[in-house]
Length: 178
Image 1: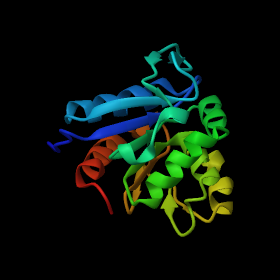
Image 2: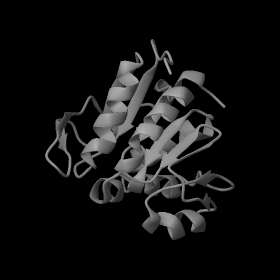
Image 3: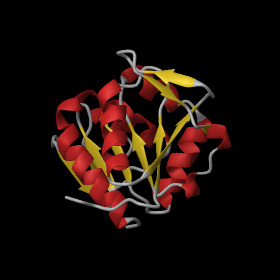
């Protein structure tokens, strides 16, 4: 699958405590396909994964505009997902992005922010199983699948699903709006 993401900018929204492979593996996949990647976080500087991966922040969520991105990646990690969903700027970026029918990839606990953005009504997705009730309460249909795509919303459960997740986000980001 040689999807072309040249000229496309993909945002990653994360903070400290992200699941290392759920950030690094998708970023590597979209960069390999030609995308530029912008890391957004609540504060400038660097963020650290659960296992010590250090990532430079390109822009704070407060300084970013969601319409600037062709796609968004939301990695998991319980601490990361819980903290980022409390950031009003991050929630607003996600809400506007999904509202504009732009593709978004979310894995594991990363889906929590989608409940705060109120973008799950009548959508189907998967996640880490402990989020099933939260996602259903936000109006989603939850499925237990390696990767699920619903109109550009690509979701996966755990790092074990990364190969399928990466292939699908690259494909969806190449297609663009839905």
